[in-house]
Image (tube, rainbow, N blue to C red; front, side):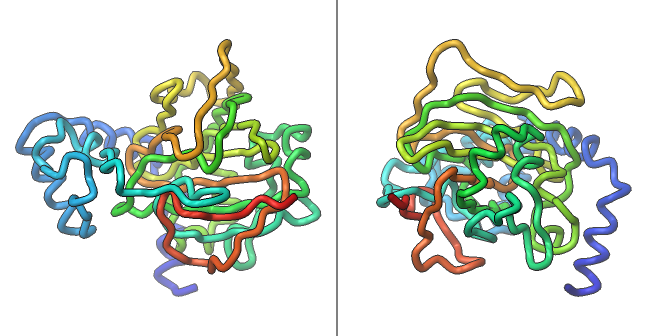
Length: 280
């Protein structure tokens, strides 16, 4: 770890993380044409965003920066592969089996527990103790909608309050238990391959997290909130399940072991490409 990475991580502790994120969210929702067009064009230039894949390629056609950031892609931009799919565009920062103690790898020298990640429920965490996990980091230039790796029926959704550290690799290398400390939305699905957890992790300046079944998630208290829905919510493989208003990370947990094939740590992945193969 470099000294600059360490300093970047340490400086985040005293910052008013939630206040900064709310302020950023207000700018991102501004519909003043000059403001939003200036922000969007500067962002495209800075992060080399490929607008040719966007359903609406004209940057000025978006009502707000948030609308641009969560833009839809053309129907053929992300063909679906075989097996379990990558839920998002990004970097495959970690993947593998959960340890016998129910730990996931965050970065070299850092692990965190699946029980803490999922909101503290031991019975729920125990369903995943023999399983596998994958962490996909979405950079600012990536497509920011999150899709289903496999067809699933939503069992419950759990909002877990927390900090809002940055989730880039520098912070992951230094802040212990990063993904289990940050604010996050845990979505538990039952699939043909057993239970699957999709954890959408909040981060510094992430203005909001949305799901297709409940819209923007609005915290009601400083405690974990468990939500179930009256009607079955079934999402097909490849269907959108949520989105980040500004970037973050998705942590996937599978109750059964899966085979990740030839993927390498740090590999670039796209939503819809084959990520893993279920084991019998």
